[in-house]
Amino acid sequence: GIQVEQSPPDLILQEGANSTLRCNFSDSVNNLQWFHQNPWGQLINLFYIPSGTKQNGRLSATTVATERYSLLYISSSQTTDSGVYFCAVPPSGTYKYIFGTGTRLKVLA
Amino acid sequence: GAVVSQHPSRVICKSGTSVKIECRSLDFQATTMFWYRQFPKQSLMLMATSNEGSKATYEQGVEKDKFLINHASLTLSTLTVTSAHPEDSSFYICSARGSRAYEQYFGPGTRLTVT
Image 1 (cartoon, rainbow over the protein chains, first blue to last red):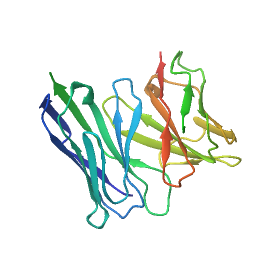
Image 2 (cartoon, rainbow over the protein chains, first blue to last red; image 1 turned 30 degrees about the vertical axis):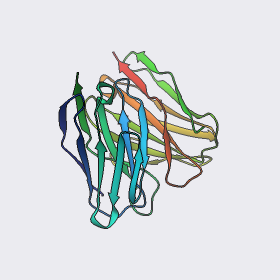
Image 3 (cartoon, rainbow over the protein chains, first blue to last red; image 1 turned 90 degrees about the vertical axis):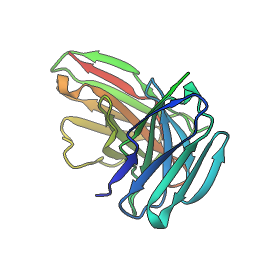
Image 4 (cartoon, rainbow over the protein chains, first blue to last red; image 1 turned 90 degrees about the horizontal axis):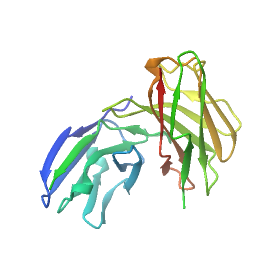
């Protein structure tokens, strides 16, 4: 089956710093979503981004489907950005999502 | 819009008993819902795909007789953990497929503890 790897697995930042999270997937996909899982476990959808670039405030994401990767950029990080970031993809021909390994982010005040 | 709820949010049960978790799409109809399990500090693992009016499709390694899934209406899917054991303790999350084919909306999760 499809493999979805994220890097780095853990990241510690000072407040105000910028970061780039990466998601690599092993097969072609029809979509990709980025999520932030808050400390209570709720998954918050950040981007629905099968290809191209999108921006929402301090966050932006780029997916290069032909090269099978996506990047999530966080600028001017805040302590509330802490949590786990997941990318998830549906293998071609399906609607079910396979989640990546996750990046655990901690932003220090 | 596109809100998914789960009930209960947290449940503790004794080993050997069964527990039912509900997943509801509140403001849209969902012909397909998905159930995931997440152990501490791990990623979400897809357990099964639930289609309204038909049998669920389970992922490899998931015991269908232990994790009973019923999708009786376009807004409700239930997961019943039968004869629960401490190793079933986990965070269970459902999602519902929206009107745009590849978008999914996730519930807040149910934390199950089996003592």
